[in-house]
Length: 102
Image 1 (cartoon, rainbow, N blue to C red):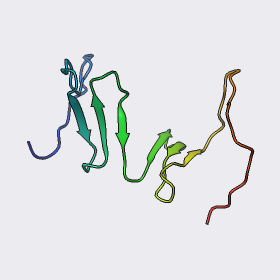
Image 2: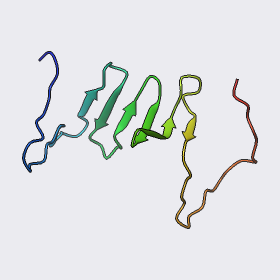
Image 3: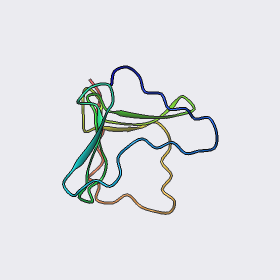
């Protein structure tokens, strides 16, 4: 198959894209533009994994919410909004430090 696959959202039916009934140790991948940008799942009770080259940006109403990974620091997590903990705590943090960005 070549080109774009567009699923109609007309009517009241749910649309499903994916794979069900995977045999154990089998995987399912959805490429997102390149082979390194993809959603990946292996049937072994593992989580769905998002592989990206330049991080993953979450937006709502066209405003940045958070970014997981950056070009400069793939392990960096940036929150652009307040974090509401709902009476929970953040634990196991090292002593606070301030790191200037280059």
